[in-house]
Length: 251
Image (tube, rainbow, N blue to C red; front, side, top):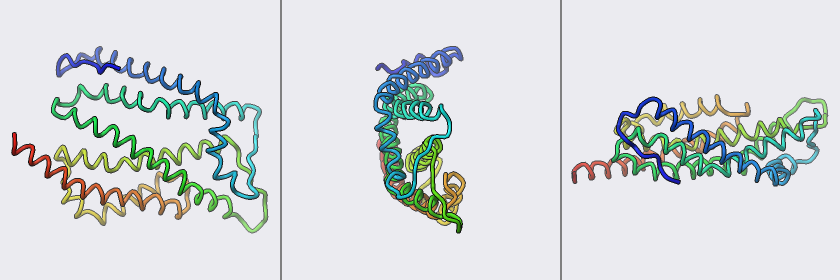
């Protein structure tokens, strides 16, 4: 796929609109093709995604409306389509952003995009395989004093799962954002190191706000890895600054 050519530094408004339309159209085609593939395997995919609940004893999935099974199948297909088309989506997104950057900064996008993708996958995997089983077990079996049968609708669980994984994937983008700000000279690693205490409280506050579950256990499991990524970003930031200063001295 060819990258959009840059004619000048100040592209006309209509050219920006046409480029945005191209991004949306190509992305829509990619998601549509991926959704067709997802439709064929949607039942197996949902069964795998529902395994944290299916593994629990005395918990059953229920259907409350006639449209729920087909809508769940459609949502699973679309989510699968987005995952399958993710490389295309990222390429289209960054091909639209590239002309807004300086020529000497574009090379860093080839590091940012794969790093962002890897961190998103790691965050989603950490949330699904480690935090979700603990959070689901805590939520479903922390009830009142009256014994009751626990039943979960398919659509509500799918919505909960999408939000859960999306939050973890986004929070794991912290190193990419911080290192980009450090490379641009907006933030210094020394400043991040001095603000550790405030960063910790800020991360805890953010995780409490964006967490899809109200329990402290899930919020703690979410805040811990994010703060660890903050510390890693500080030490990587020193390397970025060192390489940047070396490049400036050479030029």
